[in-house]
Amino acid sequence: MACIAFYPGSFDPLTFGHLDIIERAARLADTLVIGVGRHHDKRGTFTVEERVAMLEIEVAGLNQQDGIDIRVVTFDNLAVAAARQNEADVIIRGLRDAGDFDYEMQMAGMNAGLDQDIETVFLAASPKVRHIAASLVRQIAAMGGDVTPFVPQHVSERLRAKQD
Ligand code: ADP
Image 1 (tube, rainbow, N blue to C red):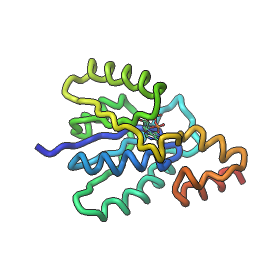
Image 2 (cartoon, rainbow, N blue to C red):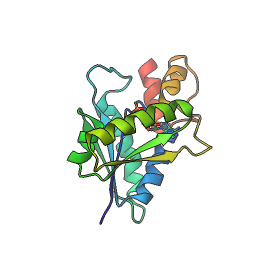
Image 3 (cartoon, protein in one colour):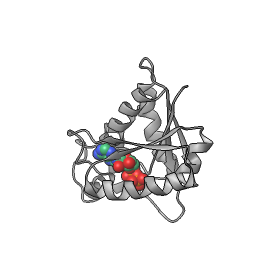
């Protein structure tokens, strides 16, 4: 049976940490659906449309590679409900540290309570990107710092344009 994986997140903005998870998850699953959360109570630096556009640029490159099939969607409901709508078998989440672990374990437990058929699969952050957090990238950019070690070039350009 073909495996469809759903990777939900804020992606505000897309970082090399997210990209590492995307590349690895796309090799594990037959299809990877990236879900950009549209949450009304959470106003971000980038609009959902801008976040999707940044993801689409990277996904276009990855989809050229053999055996990789990635789509980007938005969702405004529960991640587990969005996973089901996209016919996913698993939800992918990245684990960086103990903070992620505690939060993600709780989320995985709640999601399993909501839908027993969908498994949460955790990918351990790769050492080279483990320190990267979108929230810190936003803070560094807001203070005029260089974020090019943490995000693709087109993302850092968009961040710089936001500060002007
Ligand atoms: P959320 O608001 O849902 O936490 P994020 O966009 O911050 O959304 O993160 C989405 C997912 O990507 C989460 O599972 C998070 O742990 C994972 N992630 C973020 N940064 C990294 C990183 N540097 N390495 C591995 N996983 C990461």
